[in-house]
Every structure is written in C-alpha cells, then in structure tokens.
Length: 220
Ligand SMILES: *Cc1c(COP(=O)(O)O)cnc(C)c1O
Image 1 (spheres, rainbow, N blue to C red):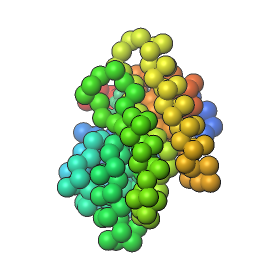
Image 2: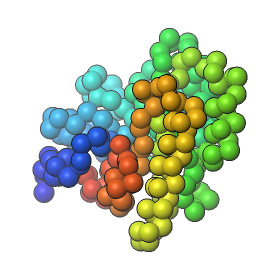
Image 3: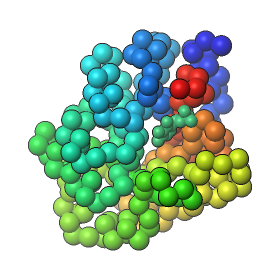
Image 4: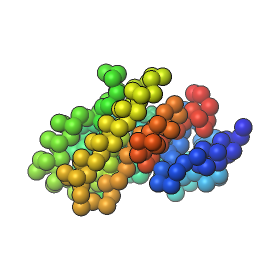
C-alpha cells in the first residue's frame, strides 16, 4: 500500500478529537514530504540532531513534535523549531526550556511525561514529583512554558489488559492535574498516548494525540 493510502486509512479510523503525530524518526525527508503532500502536518522526532537536520529541508508550516528523551544541553537548539515537546520528565528540564525560550521570547508548549510502564528503562515523572513541581512558587514563575497536558508510554507487551490499565492510569493523572492545577487553562487538554501497537487501546482510554511510526512508514 502506498504511504498516502496508509495515512488515509488511519485517518478514517480516528474518532473526532484524536490527532495524529506521524513519527518520522529515521525516515528521509523525501518520505516525510510524501505525507506532507497528502496533508499531514504534525511530525514527531526523538533525536535532536535528526530534527535539526530535517527541519530546514521541509516547509515551514510543519509542526515538529519532540517525543524523545531530551538532554538539557540540547534544549537550546530545539526551542526555536518545536511546536510541542512531549517529553518533559524533570523540573530541571522544564526550567531549562523556560530559560532558553525566554531568550528568544517564545512560549513553548510542553507535555509532562509520566512513567506508567513497568519497564525501568522508560523515562517520566511520578505523581508526587509532578505535584511538588506544580505547586511550587518557582513553577508559577515560569512564563515561557505552557503546559498542555501529559504523555506516557505503556509497557511493551501483548497483555492488552495491562496496557489498558496503564493508559487509564495516565488518563486519571491527566484529570487530577487538570482539576488541581489547570482548571483555568483551556490549553491543558492533550493526552499523548498510543503508538502503532497500542493506539486503539489508547483511544479507548481517552487519547487525544497518537504517535504513529511503524504503521505508516513500515518497520524501521
Ligand atoms: C518511535 C516512537 C513512537 C512510534 O512508535 P511506532 O511503534 O513506530 O508507532 C511513538 N512514541 C515515541 C516516544 C517513540 O519514540
């Protein structure tokens, strides 16, 4: 099947309110442009160097999502070009984004990444860390970051009940944070969860942003 057909089929499956981030990591710009020409605008990258290399080669209205683990010393180079950073996994990282964003007077949309999987290797905050950050005076002083929701990755397993449970946990976290810290913020609305193997389960649990690579582009 062609890439464009694959995109069309996936879009037809998505209920209203669910948006697609096409995860273009490892894909060459010509392939990304094929999806761009078919109307796709949101693309996700997980490596800073790769994002920086690709961004100038594609049209300026592409919305680049940064979805990978982000090191503080690389924040400066992506702040001017990302439309949403999904992977804020520490207060120190958020402060760094705020600092670099303030330098260029640009407010950056960010998601807080939560650790919901059983695998130790995956990054993310827990609720305690998030609440201590969000209730601090220092957080309320960060004027150049805009928290738009949460992101998480489920355990890589065939066990669908387990994956659903983890997504439900993230959905609960989203609702609690919304009530406690963001009730006045119309921007706090994104629940970024679901990849090729589990996006159907994620949508059932309330995902608003799915991040799909393999299903569109084939295996890497
Ligand atoms: C690679 C990646 C995806 C996409 O995974 P697929 O299984 O190829 O759909 C989604 N989210 C993150 C954070 C990724 O690194």
